[in-house]
Image (cartoon, one colour):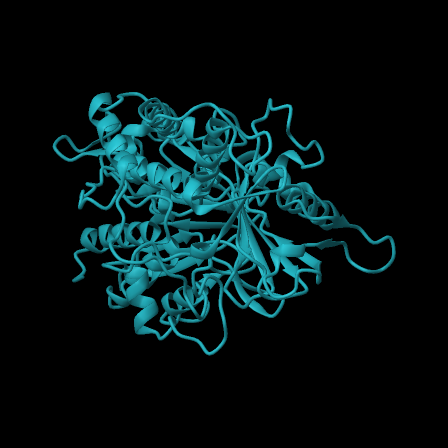
Length: 542
């Protein structure tokens, strides 16, 4: 009886488990299949949890468009989109957000909305979307469209520079005196609108994981594809999709706490790939599908010229260069439990770094946070998003430091008094007019919870982006299996061999999909792609 090909999948996240599901269900038991996971749980960057008796997502949160999304299809078919219990972002609180600027000034919608319209129009144009002018979009859409037509592509530019130029074009096109804004203290019209524009830019940073939008490649932005339809969260938690994928796998296929420390490949032995594990054990395989994050790959190739690298021999240049060029950032979520429900959704507008009117008590790691809002309209749990340096700093802070930072920030922006009890009572701030029903009621922050994706050695960050200096070609290079084989000559990397073991090391994960990188559905598609590659190789019917 012929030996079954042995396939080892590294990583039990969306990509790895999708590949395992496909290989197991479409191969008629033709493979010896194992999924090895370095951590103590499945799901990878999907991690549904609980905080203050509420279902929350520590990692992946959204189905990005329901039209055609495979994640939506699974969630719908498994009944995961409905629940009797409330869940994170089950309704939109952002639509009712109130905007506060540093100094204690509430900014009315007539000031915020035109800037929001400008920012959204510029981003849609950068992403290659067509804006239908039905006459109701306003002057700022026209300004954005006019500016976009004039820049003619901005080759080699960044999204950040495109947005900045767009704002300058907007300001030059409107007739506004450089006077103050009534009821907004020392804020000038220009400085306030620029700060509001920056607030929306900070939200965009969390969408992309880029620390700075000036590092985000402009040309690649239009390659990124979105599904049509609304963006929703999953009532029974994102892990319900993961559990569906694993439900068909026999017990023992997924092995937890099995961290791979080295991948030896390009061997002429019968089993060409040798995996080394942290406990000293080794496993031989015909094929390995690597689904670890781009952050882990970046760390894994840093010392590939010596003995400490993840791959032996080191990855070929085309692959390692792509890994180095692509961007990979950190996004963390901060959950805050307050004592009362109906806390308003807040949009936060900050002074520039060099402004003499800055409140020095506001910690620097809060200053590029755009919002703090309840996770649904009747929740006592607030959520704020952090990206880049601030997200990494959040991981180092104590709960007490985080509470102090949030209290100080909310106080300095809303103009309401902050109180800190010296006894056993939690820190409090009197939010006054923040509450619509009881202006004098004291709201207490009772506890906080943060995700910590940057410092976790199994992830080293959150998701990928196309950085300035890289391109969609690098995402394609990420997906190329090794060794590279010239089908015409039968050679590997230019060297003839009597027998070539194909598809030794394969790659999946969100950072290997050219048009859906940074998403769970991109990871899903990449897992299918590599599973289908093997099924085709072994002539399985799929």
